Length: 244
Image 1 (cartoon, rainbow, N blue to C red):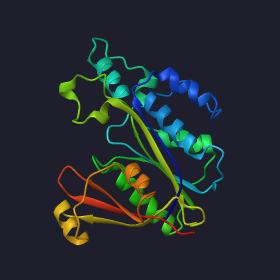
Image 2 (cartoon, helix red, strand yellow):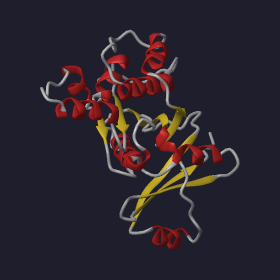
Image 3 (cartoon, rainbow, N blue to C red):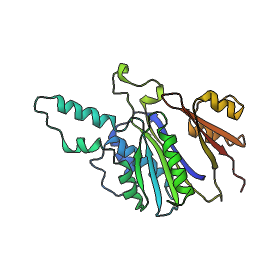
């Protein structure tokens, strides 16, 4: 599978209104009631494909570790109040229907979904998209990793890492056409541990972001993206520089 376009948004937390303003120039669908997670997802996906051609049979895969946390916290706070009345749009917001909004904005007819698999959420979504493209279930694939900043949470309740305090919407667009591709996903493999993976590849593996590994292809022929889950199991995605 060949990667043709990428988009990376990774910045300090922004207000909901800012993303609504950004989206006005990209799409005409009604997102007035959408929460921040959905807005981030749509904005990143459309930015990745802005002024690009793609098939109507495009699969949309939105990966997230935490989902629409702000909407969930809002609903829990409403439930804990005396009357326990939940605002309808807040409740709808926790269903994470971001892929529907993206499909609507792109007029896409392929499958669309939101997936979560803890620390390997993006990697599992990419693996699913990879096989869907290889076996022609979809013609193109748009895969993204979306997270809203958790800065509003008490530091004691946040996951570890500086990135959790950033808004994130990072995307790749891929298909089986090698022409003018940025990178090729050669294979996706799973191992019981990073030590087993290092033994297999006969090298020391470093945990870095997928987008960082893509950038390294400017300087080298092959790049390995490595991600471990909460149990220590490891996925390795081999990226190679295409020669068109």
